[in-house]
Length: 556
Image (cartoon, rainbow, N blue to C red; front, side):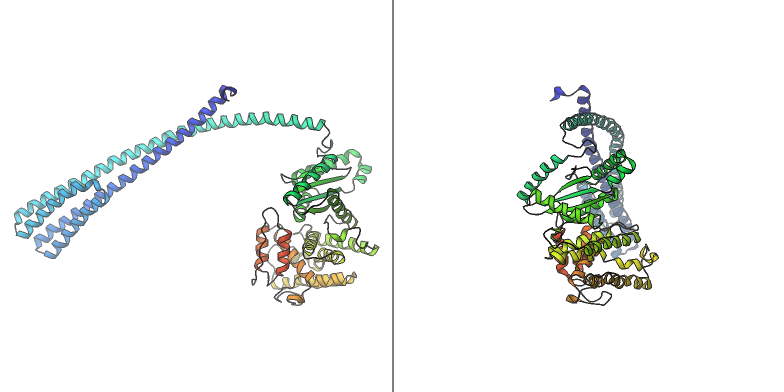
């Protein structure tokens, strides 16, 4: 291995070892300086203890001369306490303190026997001895402090050299690794070119091609069936490509296709893969994602490239490749027919279901147009109505809705905020909190939405729109309904609407996020939200680390 390294590489790695060894030595020296400083501080405290004993001994003389026996006794106890404190702080002072205690005992005996001349002699000797012990401790503390300071200076001086050396060594290491990475990148580019020569990617967009799409999808479905990890498929159709080609030429169309491919790459997760499978048709495979995760991907894509329609299908059990492609294709066709930007496949889109009438088709188009008008009017939202519609349909599917009932709640979710058309822009787009009067005006959108949807010949959906702000505890609006008095569809729309609002950015705040939204929904389940609907939502979102939470009651 070493023979394969260049001399420069060996020198750099040797420098790294030197820097690491120097860092270890610096740590040891710093620890030594710290220990010395702490010891010096303890010795300085010993000096203070001797000083306390010296002051107390002076009080002994004063009390003796005054004949105050009580004061003399108190002073004597203070001398003993000071000497004991010196030993407690530093055990090495024990011999010195023992000598002082013997002198103190002789002084006390002289006083007790009335030998005052002898007592004064012992007093002077004791004073001198205590001062000497204090001075010796001070000198020792000073000497240790000087040693600690010298150690600290060595740490500083050597540290400066260490920092400079580390800068040079790690700079050289970064340069060496960068050169190595460039060589690896060059090898990867050669491999990519080789794969391109094998026609495994689309030459215009550099995305993977139609053949690889079917191979990869079959493999991912096998893995999903084996492991139980969900899989989502998104089919995309570039809007108005033929018109662009006819009007501005095929080069303009090619640039548009390349722009979409670039937006796809920027929107993908590391595990996702995008494909161009036809002239204006694209596909994205999203492993470990369900329908809601795919919808979030499409929202990211629309933020970067809006001129594309999407259909989504998810495989959460054993599903064939053709069945999954069929479901995503049905969602895409339904989205294009109803002029919606994205739809998630549900059973009501199955061609085997009741075929939509001309009036149904016109109703869908009108609903999509109204939803876009509402989202355009509200500066704080982007595709809010469409997102609530899709999430309502997913939750309803989880709760067992099928067929016509499922189609109706999807439509009601799309129209739930249509009444905001009648709310003044100054209130709708106000970045601060609303006043009581403004809030009362805002609440009127539920009644106005009911009137608009009812006038469109959709009485059931109108009723669900009217009550989508009612609360389980009866404190909602406009009618103060409670519990089962509120239509289940309205309860579903309320949960979907609230979740989308808490997971979408606003100009005046960043979105609190998915975990916060789920916690809030669970906290208010039983008071504001239907607990069964909250549970269904958590199951719909149960992917890639999102936990299913048990609903619990709470008051708002």
